[in-house]
Image: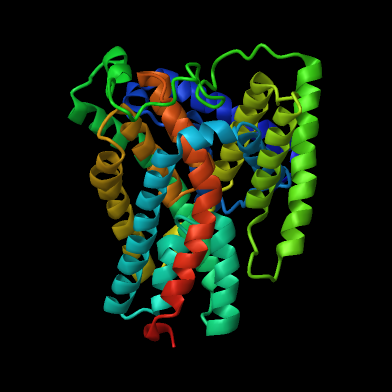
Length: 411
């Protein structure tokens, strides 16, 4: 059964409404702060899986809007990135980046070690490590092609996509429970107390930014106008067009980067250039478009999951992914949380780290939104995570992967 682009958009909208109703109706989902797109998207994915398994009907959605929605989301992250704010949060950003790089290395060590112990090709360990988990679908597909063409690993791309899909699901599920347990560790059981956790330390957001960041309040009404909406949409369109051109220019060079990173980079330059000219991006419109793009992208990504591909994973790869899931929970709880200050900001950072350490940047933002909607703002987390998860991690991951490929075991 083929669903055209309009039907897919309708289905994604219904998935979001379903997720909203599920979270409102089921205390367990609220307790573990499961994001609404994740709740609704997984129900839709299970329904599609049921049709495939029992009715032998394959539902094929037209996902041509999925990539533009993802790129629009990353453009809004760039338009919201003020270099002055990043400079003031620089020490914490550098600390968080170091934590993230540590996980990249551990993911590959565990992946390669388990693959070797289980008698599988060590390249599958890399695919089930930082390539497809911290890297996501795009990075996984790109390296899968390289592993097939240069190393002769058959079905590498399919394995990478399956691993990334597993990570996307688990990243969206685990962020909330990890945050919940860390909140209990702080001894802060209610939102007001959790909001105050960490007060008096130097780990809070800069005092110059007392209000919430653009993506912190997805449910809040945004007081924007048609003119502001169109102006922001123009900036996003320019970022997408120029970012894709830049990505094509860099293809095949030593500086090759995914298209969404190029879009983000262009948006940062555009926003800060306009700010210097006294024409800053309109934050409310940026937040509105960004949150809508994020929600629809996640709904489409989750409702189109081919869960039967996960069921078909070979035992060694599935074992590696289970180990990586345990690693992510332990690392976020005992490394990310402690290194980032053992306070409320660190809780939200840990939830975000689960999102992109296993899944993708949109999952990280959704995790943090679910946590802060219940326990209060974390300006620092929404300042640091988008830039690290959307920009720096891809550069760091490429370097880490190449260093591992230089090991004798791959030659």
